[in-house]
Length: 496
Figure 1 (cartoon, rainbow, N blue to C red):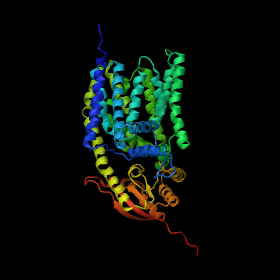
Figure 2: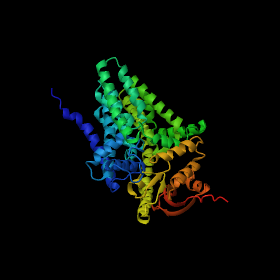
Figure 3: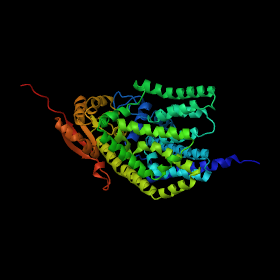
Figure 4: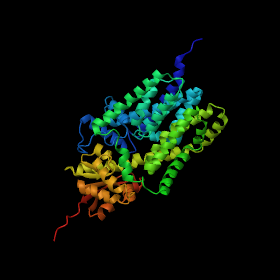
């Protein structure tokens, strides 16, 4: 009896082709590479700084400052060597992340004993599930993190271990910091397995350590720190660590409810996870993940369409695959059937958010930056809170009032905003302005409403005058429009 090995690659090949086609359709529909988030352009700016060896926008700031994912940035740099357009290279990275995510789901399902057709449907369903496709298109590390979780589960459910498992565990913390817990827990599972030789365990620890050390060294030589500053900068600015437990609980509940509604009722399949060791490991990861956000940054789970929660999507789909390949197959089919009533709503909500951001918010920001370049050729210092696109496409020097790309600004929030639970945020912003003397402020109306940035500067003696508002399609919500203000510092006190 002969076995046609090529047949084993028909289904995963089809999954990869369908995923490529989905991304190609989006690329053509948008008229090229388009990204709904400003953070995508932080990645592009950081890659440019690494290529050029200096940053003319954030003077003296190392490229890896503001880069959460060293792995994502390294892959972007590699693709930029092959693709002339850097935005096209980033879109290609999004595509490859999506393909890796879908294939990770497929091979996980195959490990569990699902027929190839079912495995392919679950894997491709992962693009539709909770509107995941639009998170894979965001130009950030979300897709790469989801792919890492999917492949981690795949390697955990393999019949035999390989050193690729150790490589992935070593790299995961540098894809997303939250994956550090999953990385360590996965290695502990390997070390506890009695059917794995001591020699292989030692080799795995060495390989994982070597993989991690490469990124640690990169961060250390570039920034003088072993970890990225992005988590700390956001934690100090949003200042929720010392908020009332009731307020933090409400934010976490809202995020979990949003995720539950988007994934209902498929998340109920989590109880079908097997083998037990893998199920317990993933359950522990989810609990620590949610607890960490509750402790330090609960509102973060609501940012960017809840993108941080999407690293849990492969775990939910793993539960679905476990249910379909077990004695709970009938119950799982029932849950899948019910989910068909909810998937369009979640997918539609993410699609609307994606289109609003791409066609509206990004258009407004692009228009303001073009106006800046054309009308302010003397390159005045501009204070911003969205530190990406204006650095990527603009010519003016910048100061990031959040602190992602201006580490000195983070110190003001650490000293003032953070311990006051945000009540003294405007004071910290005014102190940043006093220290850097910006001549303009570029602010999204939504941020100004939430944090009172313009009024706060006025209360602390600064004079503000709106000089331009970014143009966008008429249907763009007012909250998604960027405004440019001219700033004048407070007049110095004159001794009598």
